[in-house]
Length: 173
Image (cartoon, rainbow, N blue to C red):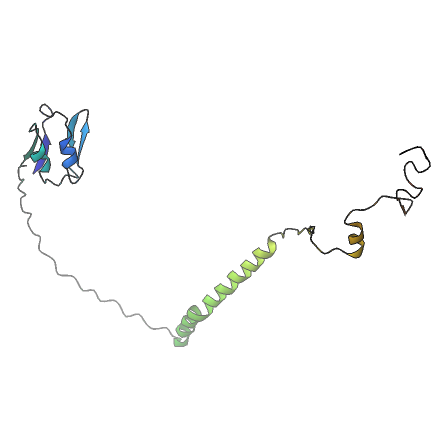
């Protein structure tokens, strides 16, 4: 069964769009269009259409001719040739032990060595020490409060002691 819209009769009222439970109907240029993939053929749109533009159409059933069944062949049993065992039975046990115990440990050791080498190859960022204002100062820095005084010929300049700018001028203020 398939739901179809007669475009000549559809007036584009949109009642079918609102009632469709699967959301398979939409309006295109004022005419209802049904998406046949998402339509569940519930026929709710056919009942609500006031213009009678939506109808359910029975599709013809296509008869499929049966296909002749092919007889199943019996599987052929093939026997493998006898493979002679290893001349040294201890060799297979040693190889099995190596693959089970030694190789995983060797792989882990190689990966760890590679990680260490890559970590050493990366350059370390230089660390710059910038003391904060609240950091503990040495006695010399505490006395100077972090500021240095200028010195000339190894002696510190002090204002008002006869040294420095305007010390010889009595008229300067």
